[in-house]
Image 1 (cartoon, each protein chain N blue to C red):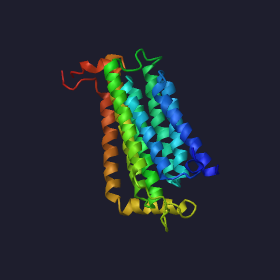
Image 2: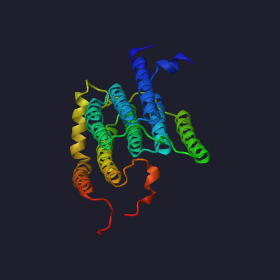
Image 3: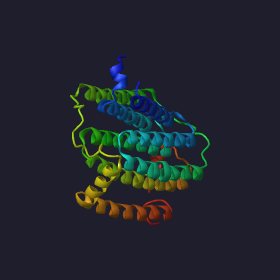
Image 4: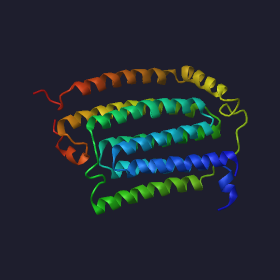
Length: 107
Length: 177
């Protein structure tokens, strides 16, 4: 491993880190069965995208990426609130948070 | 190794390890703890990218409000340990693993093969000054160029607040009996 890769932190480093975080969140959404952990994994994916925005914003010298991160954060918080309210409603009805039991959602 | 490089690698390792433990822990409360750690790590990465205001908002909104919401709901459910943490099925599991690996390879390959410019742009509003200037410029373009998005976000938050209360009051089910 050459020392230039370790010492010179550039845009690529941040982008690869964000991609790895995104893939971690995606694996969580695909493999886990708990609704709350699914929502947490979605938050992880949104965070990695925020990291990409801020990295591009720094290395391009444009502030618009920060604005986009601001919007994404607000929408992520709103999404978590609604998702958790739905989870509480479903839990009251089924007493279970495993999505295996949600095939009976007939209203 | 310079201080900047050491900080980046340290934060990258902390963020990735805690992000992985979010999906590997079978107890949801440990997952929430690891998620909070990930949020703090990402916030510190924002500081290394000179986004001081965004880093503060990240700490307040994610590590504060959203995590409190998650932990409250977990306490409400009184979950001990998931009986069936991970999805079953060898075939579907293999397909999921293949798709995750495929998207990881595609993204990293695209980043590696792209010709990314590395020279710093002169007169960069993000890196000039001690952080006050970038926060001031952020406020200025938020309330001039992006004022419509800001107002739309306010309407969205109102709808979300009303909707969450309505969901919490409902008895479950979509049809009136």
